[in-house]
Image 1: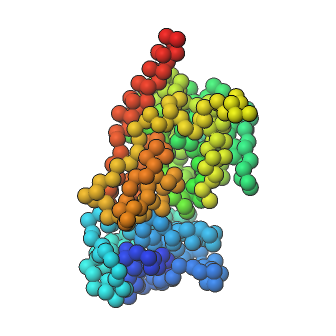
Image 2 (image 1 turned 135 degrees about the horizontal axis):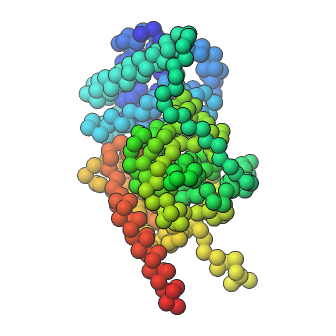
Image 3 (image 1 turned 90 degrees about the vertical axis):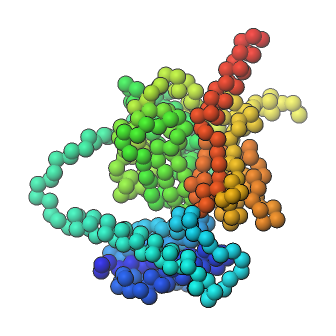
Amino acid sequence: MNVKIVLIPCMGCEKNIGKIGTLAALSLEKSKKFPFLRLNPSITQIAAGEYTSFSPETLIIALNCCNVRCSTKILNQKSIKPHYLINISKYLKDINIPKGDYSIHELLKDSSVSIITECLSNEIEEYVIQFTHKHEENSVIKVNEPSNSKTSFTFTPNYSKMLEFTFSKFKFQVPINPNRLFFNWNDAWAYYLGEGKVVIGITDYLQKNLSDILICEFNEIGTNISQFEAVAEMESSKTVNEVLSPFSGKIIAVNTKLEEAPELINEDPYNNGWIVVLECNNFEEESSELMSSEEYFNFMKEKIEQEGIYQ
Amino acid sequence: MINSDKNRIPKQIHRFMGVDRKDIDWFPIIDFNKCNNCGDCVQFCAHGVFNMENGVLIVQNPKNCVVFCQACLKMCPKDALIFQEKKKVLAQIRQIKSQQKQSIDNY
Ligand code: SF4
Ligand code: SF4
């Protein structure tokens, strides 16, 4: 595997898990399993310039050791978008991490280091295979464009007006369509297409609070969703969040563009950043429980005035 | 003016589906058999629900928890947080709503 990889561990010094993750990254580098893997410490003010000079083929992987996710956050501050995020805390369910004050040298002997190294190696390998696959596909010149077998769905909503609320340097928008738009208290919107079908997305307010969305994973087409259950999960440079469905029903389409470009949710949350289409079980009753644009606008305004924005 | 009309308008942010947030039983419960008091959830939740007390995790402000949010459960490395079933809570909310409606109708 000759893909150039830059792995950026969090260098967490406060917690043992941070040290163990960093040790695992070091031993992976030493093992030469990925000959072109380079380990970079988290960027500091001084070294930031170096990262912008990476060639576009270089894979930048942020390695977070706990859910504070320092590595992603620091990259975000420097406006560098990692290609892939690893959070090793997902491997910790069955591993015991030593408690108490241990030095790096003491932890080096701990069995958790080799287990995590293994997990890390597998995850990177899987990702690199995926990545090279995509690269090869793109470089093959397609003579016969394959006919689009997936039923493509284009979302062209009709908004009569945008309500706007300004708070410090931010402007929060809520569109209006009195008969078709509904909102829930978890900052998701639903746009009624007719025949019991709705398009679901997140509001401008939630999008701004999450800041740069890096991954959007949806539930599969065909999944049945209860009201307020998640239709998708998002990871941003700041946090993780679920998209909670305003309606119950079956997912009949997903916005596959978000796989490649999750930032569409940030750029255009009410149009191109739509997330899924749902065939509702009970549109009439459930829609009567939700908020209109004006109601959501007031709810959002109170929330911002009281809680501020998480920046 | 203390009793201005403005003060009497119920704050929407303390309500969920038209029901007072205080009446809704949605908040995390800590599974102390699994929790290792790492404190990640304290830093993670933006609503100040958790806190540490003498090195032990506590749910300090349960009713600050956003109804139907489970984000902290997703990120907890030990799967140590428990929530009520959404269905049950939704049924509870609907019941309170219908009671409210009845009492208004009877009035
Ligand atoms: S993140 Fe999980 S394990 Fe850590 S303190 Fe919170 S509940 Fe406990
Ligand atoms: S569910 Fe959400 S709001 Fe509630 S404690 Fe967890 S992160 Fe905080």
